[in-house]
Image (cartoon, rainbow, N blue to C red; front, side, top):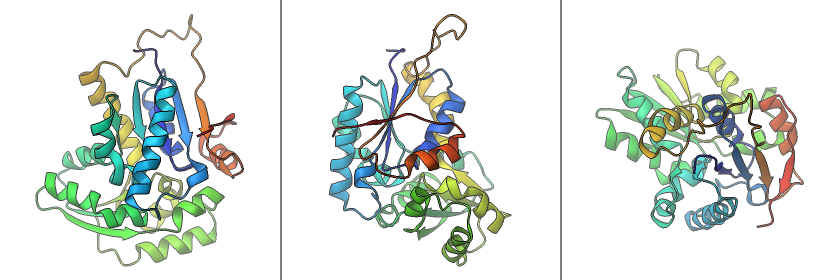
Length: 268
């Protein structure tokens, strides 16, 4: 099972922020990434639609013989994770629990903000899970529906992005940490840090990658390709699939990864 790839999916380019962190933490792993650009955005869809799309994406990844699946999408994690974990035997990991594990380890974090898509905030998944697992934590939520579409367009470092983010975060009280509850949002991290200089900005993809490396490997013993030796074994290239290739994905991906990528069409 070691030589099987890890599968990942998101509604678009945002999940590449998670992909980037996993490649940093586990460079020997092959990843098959699926961007469901045909059905973007997920944040405005019903819970049942999100669950149906998540199952469709998982079925596609299982056809690629993956050994584990990362839901690199805040909306799908918040609304579909528990259901798909109950259906499929393959390990499925979302962005919420790894982030909560990190916050639990930081006694200084008492006041937490969450910015995410409308669907994620309305599900209350972050607040419910944070308060269930951490005593005396205060959670402040803000839906930010414009940010994911802006990220898909590549509007991540212009004046419109700065003004939009300011409008979304201006009413937060003093926070110890702000969770970027949509995987598109790390694309705006520099702007957010500038506007919230005394707040820890939490990239959920980074916490998920560390969680997989430090926790899941110990338990499952399936996610690390330790047999690979780059000196004598050619590592297989990652594969990136999109359900609709007529989009700005490649341009934004290049800005994020600083390398050109090859896109394949996923016929699902």
